[in-house]
Image (tube, one colour):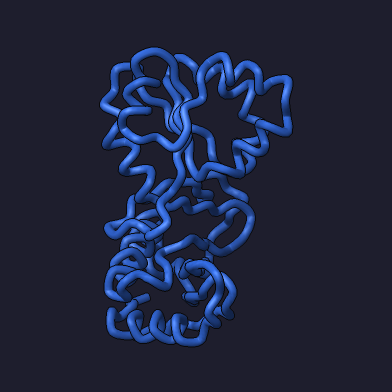
Length: 218
C-alpha cells in the first residue's frame, strides 16, 4: 500500500482547505481500513503508544502517579499532574473524580510499586479506555519519559477492522504530518503478518470535516 509523499501532502492540503474555520485548532486524523485480519484473536489487537517524529501542537497531558522523590522529579520535569498515593487511595471512594481524571489526561505514568493499587482503583476506568499507566522504577529519569509520552499517540484496534489516531493538526507543516503518517503506517505494517497487504483504504480528516480518501499507487 504505497503512500506517496506528494500525494499525502496534496491530501493534507485538501483537508486543511476544506475545513471550515473553528474557534479551536482542529486535529488531522488518520483512518486506515484493515483487511484479512481476525480481530477476535488477541495477537491481532493493538493498544500502543507510538512516538511521532513531529509532536502535535497540542501535546498530550500526562498524569504521573508517584510518591517520594519520583513525584518531586516529575513535578520538576513539568508533569501536568502528580497523583500521590494518598490521593489515589481516596479515588476508590470517588468514582466521579476517577472518571474525570481519565478524561482530563491523555496518558499516565505510574511508579511500579503503586501499580497493584492503580489496578484496583483506576483499572476499571483506565482499562476500557486503553489508558493503563506505563510503569516506571522509582529512581527513573522521568523527564525523557514525559517528553516521549507528550509526543506520542495511541493506536487501539479491538473489534473493528480499522485503526485511527491523530497525526497532526491544521497549524502543522504538511510535510511534518506526512512523516507522522508514515511512522504510524510502518508500525501497522510491522504488526501484521502480510504487512501492506493487511492494510486497505486510507483516509484523512479534520476534527469537524469529512474524510478524504488518500489515492494509493500500486
